[in-house]
Length: 471
Image (cartoon, rainbow, N blue to C red; front, side, top):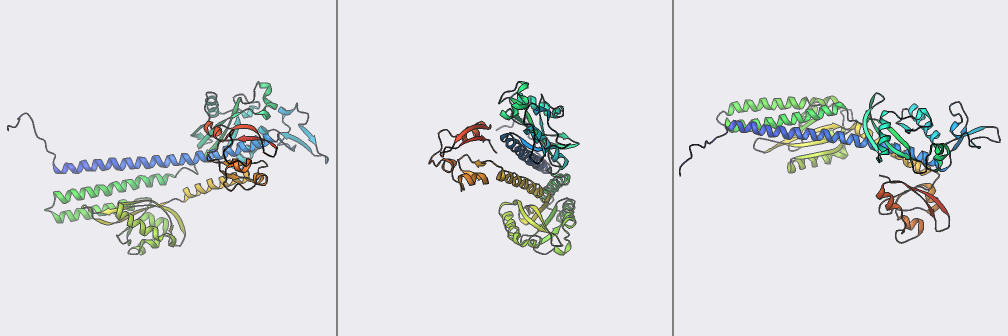
């Protein structure tokens, strides 16, 4: 066999492999950081849109209720003068037997006053607007005008984060269509029932929802520390191979690398706890001391002393899972401060190994999620307020699932039809054993649009029914 002299054999020096591994590790750490930042942003946007949609649905219910009753009579005051748009109605203004002067508020007038009261109270802002408003003050701003033009092209929702009122805000808008009650004021404009009249917009400040800047920096610094630890591991492994004859020098370099890793951990904004394989604390960083008050007195103690007693098993199971899988992600528990307060945290733990892959201990990053928990509680409170409104609404209200089961029924519904108990609607309301042939549930869910219809109960009583898709 003859070697071809035109072909050259290239070899890569051993030390260059270390740089290749470091480059790959850098790409992995950067991808992980990018993914986490994108996920945090996406979660914040999802929460903001849900809050905006909850406020929108509440506003629609207010207006539907007023529309169903033909408006509301209220006392005439300087802040609530008679509306000129109902001047042709003979009963716009009435006088009670006691001499009180009342005026009729149409749904739009009532909705506007609710929005003004909400703005004065610092609540999320709403606005009922149109490209052809009767009242000049109801004219759309630039963002609302673009949304209304999108509705005319067939869009059913416009939502995005924009700069509004001097701060980033989630703005959501859905179209509003003419119903019978609207013709009193808008028939002269040529509208018919079902025409696009305008839209209702809701603005939610993002500041209480967006994860704060310190969290973003802690995420960046945490990945930087993790990257540094990985680089240190790679460097140590390479030096162990390439400098096997210089063990003393390798030991000094390992100690320096360990010191650098400790400095990196101490520079993180999230709290960090390092334990041995038995769960005894070997190191805590400065952030843990600053946020929670613990100091050198916990070194050598079991890590379970840092959490509420009910969460002790989570700590031990987390160490076990790290030994089995190499990591334990997103463990929620209540962390104890030195003075005994409980702080909700999210813990992410990873196994620490030597260059040969033998386990040495566990590093846990402790993230304070108080702000996120408060945002979740605020959203839950808003949901409870909405359900309370539905409970007392003077109409038969029920929420049905795609399997026809009634998941919620308000007081008026229960008094009329009895307690649903999770039974299907056709059984509760009609006494049938199978879904009705003319059931509107699937039509509403498939079209994702509200429908109105007349429904006659088996007892002979007729009802005007509004069906709305609800996510």
